[in-house]
Length: 242
Length: 338
Figure 1 (tube, each protein chain N blue to C red):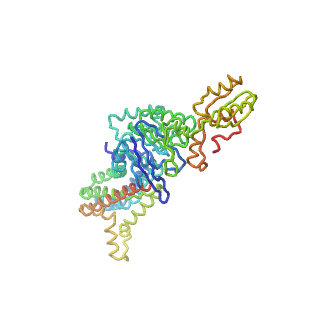
Figure 2: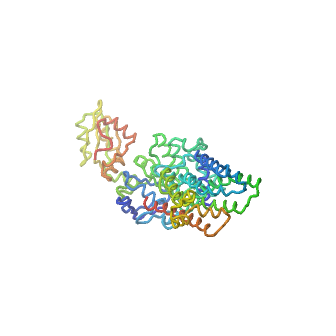
Figure 3: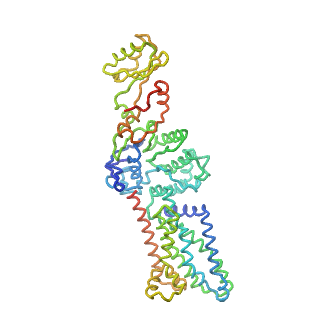
């Protein structure tokens, strides 16, 4: 069997051996439904998933660090990284395996939001374009967040440090989301423009409107690949430093 | 099977390996001995591909660990010093994972897992979580994962450290069994372990090899193999007669207990066996011989000589020597005072 899949399978199973997984998943689904089907939604009288997607960018900022913090930090702390690096597998395979496990875990959470969407579609005339765009874009955005979290997890043997570093980095990269929300008028235009350009969540918002641009897709793919590659470099460097 | 040439490794300003070279033929059990920080673990980490050397090369089965890491890693089973395991997994789940990641084909996996469970005596605990197991059983799981792919080479870093005496004996027997068909390198602080399990020993100190030989030769090259004697008879006469026999050697009085006089006879020519002693003392003089025993110099002694003595107390846990010291010379410090 492919080495990355072996790693992914072990790692995915390992999630369910810790209560954190259930808490994270439960909280995610609760908050997601809350933002999706809040009183505003019923007042609007429009069958749309837009307000759910609008919150995803911010919601994942807080959930992804909890999903990735353990992945390398725990291996380093327990010393199991030493065995992992002596298995006949390439470092990128190990990294990709971890990434797949995290993606599967969070992907399960995303799939579990579907019943709410089907409910809406049942009662109203739902435009499926933005829904498909939103879910695909969501997966891409989550991938980018995960790669960042994995990278930070590989830097430390302390899960809390990994969590905080990832959270901090995601907040910085998503500043534009929060500025838009506060609709602050006294920030110069060029700053908000720059922020939205690097803004991790912004690219998702345009995808979630059903506008699939290759620019946004490429942005996420490149971001993910870059940090997975950095992650592999960190592990390779360990072989030199010991 | 293993060829190591001039390995060098720095950790920052500290030199861990200053040019280590050795070879291990197929089927040999090699013991790595040395004080903490001598470079044992570093050498093992390089062989397993966990660490890159600064200089030098290491080959396993003719393949270079740097050039063909995936191939050499397949040849090796590794038990790291801290025996890291996924504590939350069950023994079986963990061994299945180890088999998969080690590239054991799916259809052979069940048999491979069953074999190591049997060989390592894990049958009774295979359903339990690893975290629940005692240290001795965890060590067995560590050994089991190292052997899951039936590797030609096993690298075991301090496989018995931290175990209780019963567990130590069990693990040693296991290693002996494993060593019958595989090439094994094991590191240890317990010199007795080397004596119990290894064909050959390498003593490593400050990143260099200071001794590399078959165990018996390493022990005998120390030269003097003194005889321990207990005789019932007149002390002075015994001393002079033994002195005559030994020629250039000398007689070291140890103790008197009851009627018996105990001494250690140094410098007796090797070819002069126990018979000569018996003839002299019993046949010619009619004294009673209550003890006659050739003392083999302890590996501890050689080890201390080569590694500069007292840097690190070597754990002595040799029952034989303790018993001897207690019975014949209670006042004597064990392990020698060189």
